[in-house]
Image (cartoon, rainbow, N blue to C red):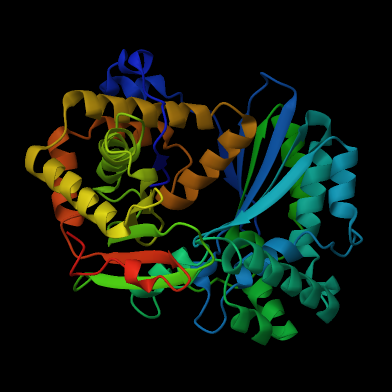
Length: 457
């Protein structure tokens, strides 16, 4: 689902001491109150008086998957524009006022949602709520060409820094364009393309805001040390007058598809070492096999005792690193293995070794110890995400949007506890035994290092 594994040490005897099947009981519930304002804003309040801090976490139910081909990057563009001031907040003052109150804030965008969050001393809660309400209800009157152009250039520069000019930075968008069918909501990158960003007009951007950044397309979570009655008064006062927006378009149902055959790609880049990416189409988050695929990822590359780390990095010492993860998002998912060979080692050799380890797992399954280590480590991660009020606010919003209820953390733990050794063996056979997309990123002029059908095994 959301768990990526690079070879590192997490699991040990202490983690293995607790039976995995008790996970639903050892992951605590999050007490909360849920209600909605007349304008459609969904509100979730989760008091926690253990420390004098509070978090405000607003999710807009829009991500890059809601964009259209030729109009990509808008959700991420708004992640920046929303910090540019609003009708009652001058440019630059949003951050300054929060920082003066001892608060921190940030935002993020994925294929599925955009979120904005603040965490702060408890007495700063009214300020954070008022600022968030002002940009929800009063951003549009101040949105002009100069602001859009400025943030468009910021996003373009971010793309240069994180995609175009960073080693291996174009891997994700290269794979997505081939793994998913044309027009699939996940077939383009979250950050969008330079061409689409350049083509976006001021009216295009305004219309996107009108459609998606309305109270009836958002969920507000407040978690931490606050008085519920006071919070309800502030939320009603600041957010209540914002008018309901139009009903956002429903995302199309993603049709099922299969990767018809192994597809081999090569990409030249400014890198010293080649890198191998193998990607399989799998399932969306919370689908039946999602948890088993997360466990499989851990068994393959979750710690120094994992199959691929032990074989490639420790025993043979032919790889610098190895990563495996199941990326289950709201509409679809994929499983990916990434290997960087050591100098003098070829990507083809890495592909052969990866194939051999996968075949061994498919044929022989996994051990009880491997399963317990994976389940306990995943459960430890779930508990760790609940350790802060900001983490709790994020988990409540996540479960609310992905499964329709904020109250799902224990059910989530239980689905991992139910995974069996035969489940892991089955999903390895079903998904990793199917056709895949293989990308080799190579140093410029070294396309001969590409992995293809002739040298994969």
